[in-house]
Length: 211
Image 1 (cartoon, rainbow, N blue to C red):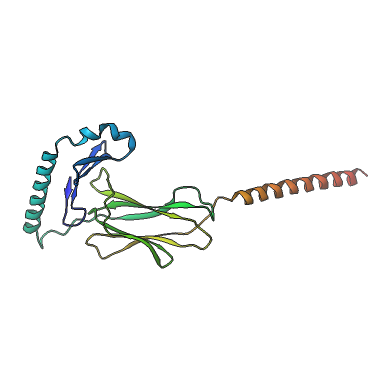
Image 2 (tube, helix red, strand yellow):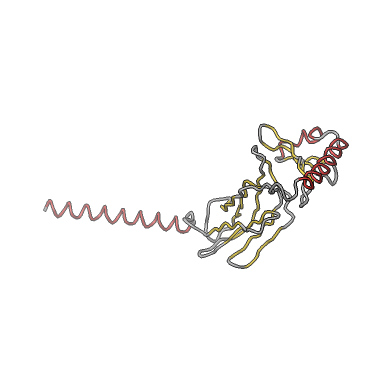
């Protein structure tokens, strides 16, 4: 469980062996499974909404009192956020794909995520709520962008953690794409043709040498 002055303010996750299984939806007191296979245990993940509400009220009071007591004494805890961008499927130029922005070591869990193509803003989200807990008390998040990449495209995922004036940027450009079907067929045809030519040359040189 966590609470903070930024959005999302309340957060509750159920973990098993450092892996997240469920998150809690405070708007309707329901459990959200991380993967569909966890759905049969949705109703028993957080069985008592009244207890959850009581613990969250305690968390909010504790946070407020601790903040007032340590004001100008203890610096705010922050994570060393890392950002990377990669494709969900093997890259083929001109074929639709999905860019994945992986954000690790997030703390506090309050992000503004901006996708750009060159300098043009494609999407921006400042109310990110899809956080996954890690075993080291940090969080991670993933953002997705559907694209059709072409040569010389430049995409970037820009991440700003709540309360921080710094922006972390990860760039992605098409590199070493998987050859398209047409190019694969062309290369196969070229290789076969060169093989036939070298075979004929071999027979010709063999004939001339014998003669």
